[in-house]
Image 1 (tube, rainbow, N blue to C red):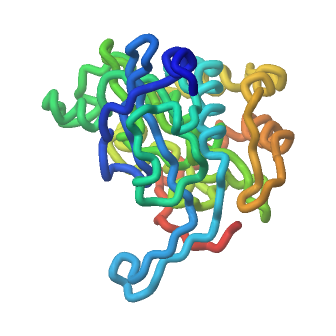
Image 2 (tube, rainbow, N blue to C red):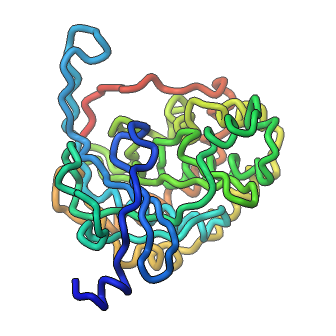
Length: 306
């Protein structure tokens, strides 16, 4: 980039961010023009081969391969705003736009040459609870606890089965904000109704064991278990999603491209249909999950679905 372009659109690398806490690499960067701080995510490629996985004497091999994760995350943030959730500004930049970032030294395969940036605000939910001495999410002073319910419903809609407590921020106003939508949406060749989630596995909206991964296995899960009687909140979020028109969703998809795993086959029309179809299934799926006792599927499934 030229000097003027670099000043207008460039960033400075500041530091690692939560090293070792996620599958990919996270960084903190500062925009040169405004001084605003951004969290950056460099997505690690999903295929992996681990010897003696979990000390069970056998390897773990994952061949599923999605390279459009940043576009999936962008769509998640855009749709979250349309559905009334707290959200953040995001952008995708080439790694060369971040001065001082040694992209080549990052020791894992990457899905692309890009960095996914989102506004840097507050601190992670797990850190917030710990540093402020709260024993649980429910006992905390977070202002919008019902955002956890809304986020659960939203994640189920978009097929985001890779949710954890650390995938939420608490901002300066004590608001809860969901921040990770990379592992979401359709793209499995064998079944277009399945969604990508944790461990690169396929998840089914009809399986209550899968539904729990739309909130994860931490403190937010315990909050959800105790929230079934908040029927009005669930109903309001389902209604907010149901009101989104195909035109609104198409606009949110503008400039983004989605593919079947392991291929260059564009599935933008199928992605739209995936979202439209799931709007009608939310209440039944949530009721089935509660009726089943709020289960969580054991991961990794290793069911061979591609």
